[in-house]
Image 1 (tube, rainbow, N blue to C red):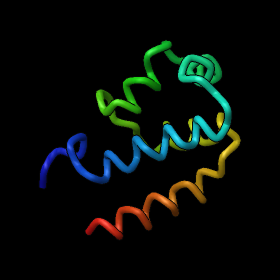
Image 2 (cartoon, rainbow, N blue to C red):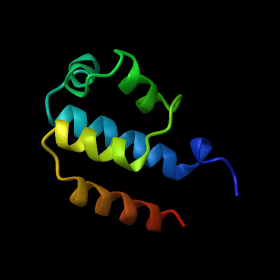
Image 3 (cartoon, rainbow, N blue to C red):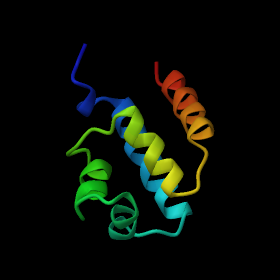
Image 4 (tube, rainbow, N blue to C red):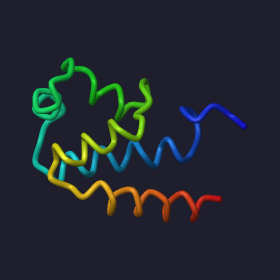
Length: 83
């Protein structure tokens, strides 16, 4: 098993995070402020320099007024299409 940071699934997650944030009309810095995280947190996640765990994914979705459950379901479908 290869490292997840370099996998197709990681790329799918990064793209989803960016789309969720953009759909909320937030900049990376605005989202970081809402999450009370350092200003580079979202940038590093979207660039693949940092992994996002499940709790962080949940918090990001909630901060963007997106349904964590629906977004996770989209991710699973995307993962399955790349098996």
